[in-house]
Length: 451
Image: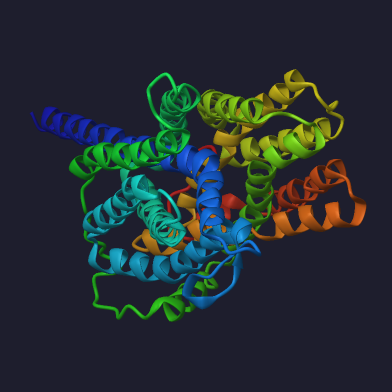
């Protein structure tokens, strides 16, 4: 009787965990359309055109009286959003760990971002300043929400399930991004047949991402549950943004192997983010490819990233997350090496390159997230994931700088793209030197059989 009761309780616990995991996947499904349709495809060109409508005869706009080239306004707005996120994330992360109430904070961040994105429908005419404000709010809110969402991973998945759960989350996100992007492209390319102007079609695509985000965020918010952290039960003060960030870094110094992994991740993720942001420039400027080809390549990356995330998750079961990530870094370097030799005016080979990127993109990101989750001390999930999220979003500046300097010195985008191999080589060496088993043990967590 006692054994049957224990088995029943274990079965109930397993069913509840699976239900919570499925809810967690749906936040990736909800928010990834913002990254794909809004940031990657539509908002940059459209907000730039709106800023140019408002520009003076010299091509400048003047937000708060500051002269800014209309063509730079989008990039500056993204940079400002990163600064805001860097200030806010440590504060929210520490508060979430201290109180154990992540879900209300996740809801606030998600619906702030969704509302700002939906309001982008009103970016007509010369309302560039409204666009900049909405972009800063949406992008910063998305970063804060992603940090809170990621911090649930070690709480909803035991160590032996974490790689698979993280990979499925990424796959859900890329699947949603692909689906919505297809619908948006149908609307955008066929806007005349729908009786819409090009600008109206773009504004509908932007707003639809916000509506999607808000609608599907309901599912994780209903299924995820808050957990009171025993490790942080004492009432610790939460410092202002920069002071809290400094406090988090000081605490992380007590776990040098966790910091060593974060350094490796910062380096190779900088390379990943630079490839994502600069591939379209390489395709258009060096290879002479048109906008439709580049958008189709973005869609191909999204579709294949679903398969890639799931495939690398399966490989991690056999070889461990660390070895699988190391293998993906070798693949990244090989893809860039092949990209150097792509012939101009040949979209087929650019699609092959996009396919290679898609297959390693989702898996390397998903397994990095799950591996880091093992290195976080219990009770400090959100606080440590704020540092991880800043590595992911706020620190990826060296790659674009190297890319730009290489082009400036050589005049060749081929040299610029091949220079990024350095990030994957250095990241490989740094990650290979991290004894992840000992790092997990030092963080106070059980060491999985394969890691």
